[in-house]
Picture 1 (spheres, rainbow, N blue to C red):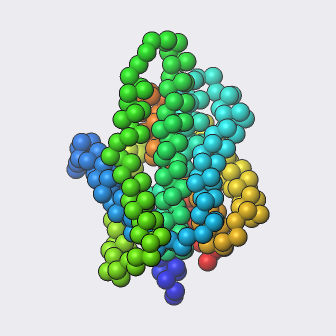
Picture 2: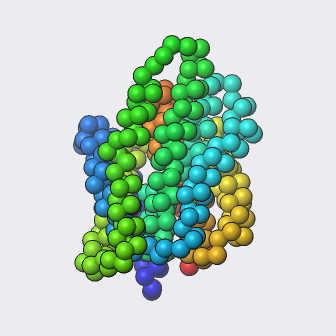
Length: 317
């Protein structure tokens, strides 16, 4: 078996296993919410920043690289617009509508998409996924959060001023964005022809697994299957948007615009990615329907891990 064939096992060891462990950690009361929050923060600040620096240090620089942030922005804005115009407007409850749109806009690009791109394309695929995921994180602050606030305020029919703008500034200019500095540092070292020491490549390989575990454990911690079953019918159109409409549109575009086959393959993986945990964060922060968003996350993630990605692996490998 070649390297990519062996790395397909990471779907089980790095993605499914931590979800299961996180689920039992919550239901057996092994850890508190406070500890889980600290784990998430450590992953975002330390692990993601280091991985970003190491992967961008060896990323081949080309004109195709300039297209990546544009595709990252489109992967947020286009599904959100389609979901808003054609599906979410059928929902009478504005909190449901806002949660649906947040789930449509945000896909699990950085963690799940990053590991899957790493399985097929090693460090270069991972770096592309992180760049697109970072673009999504920026739009999370400047587009998704204001959208979520809009639906909450419209639902509550309140015109009072809130502290949301203060919270927004803190999130956008916070230590949670430190991975941007890691990317910039890696690109600077790369552009100046400084070779990355081989030992750092070995560290990168280990950190991918550590980062996946730390990211997916809290996700399993949040799963409540009773609420998932309750809202399963509500997100059927979201599943159609995530796995059919979005991939058809974007893969048609990349076929004509992207010449790099590795980048094209990475983008194909990312267009199929399921709903992101950041969608749940936005819904919690602005009091939208969190259970609908969690239902979308669980169902689309299960479909991606058990069916979508295995098919993509055998098509792209």
